[in-house]
Length: 344
Image 1 (cartoon, rainbow, N blue to C red):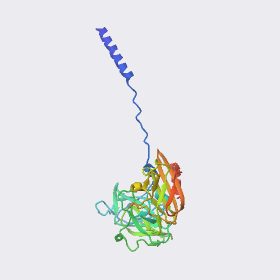
Image 2 (image 1 turned 135 degrees about the vertical axis):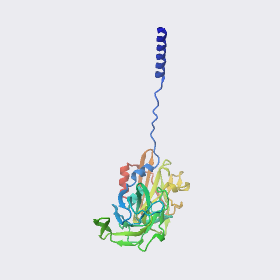
Image 3 (image 1 turned 30 degrees about the vertical axis):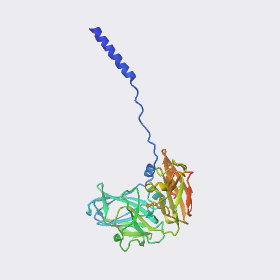
Image 4 (image 1 turned 90 degrees about the vertical axis):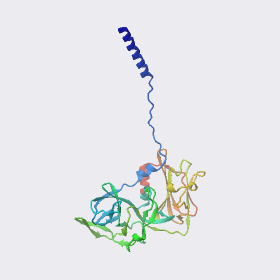
């Protein structure tokens, strides 16, 4: 009996040993994702918002690092049901974009209805109470007059619910008061503080003041620039591996503080010709005859391919049938691209 038990035990051990020895080592299933679009690049370039807290139901003014002035009124905030919020702490996030490089980094161009806009600056504002978004009845906003001349400006908002695609729309004139668009010569700066209020000193810096603004989100201080002669922009790329899926082009017009963008949402088959590796700058309505002729320009091309970021920049004066050869686009580090955008 013991002999039989011993044999059985030995046989089981041999079978178990065979199973273990024959078992294959699992293959390494980890993979590295290859990135072939600019989503991560622009996520890294995007400006970090400034954060403020204000009390609802009182008058309060905040000041952005680049000079934006925002005054909230006692009835400024409303909830999603339209009820005015008169108490509690409101968290404000403010992103300022006053130069072409920061506009590009935040993918905020200056076009509306196929027309280029001369820009006095852009901001993005988000307000929340206890993590819930709140909206605007009305408030005052001022844009420092550093990038434009003493012309009357207008206020534009994003007409697209998708904040990743900016379509500027002139604010409804019914929401404006008589001060809308006028330049107030003198900028508010905090002087001394007292409970629940701020005393201001006028220090002589001009700004564009809009006393009755009815929306948060994307807000643009602009005016239409109507050019008598306009043309298109074609950009030649190295090969078909650079295409609208992973490449974006921007046209900067420094004298207008303007940025025109080839956001891929608006690129159709006509705007990308793979037979000649060419992308064309187009407007929301697929129109490519939109670049004012005779102005100094800078063309910026950015792409992400095989986990590497690419950058190209060229400058000149706009002419009819404007064509730029970006075949020399090359790999750049994120920090290098950030520095180049700062200098635009």
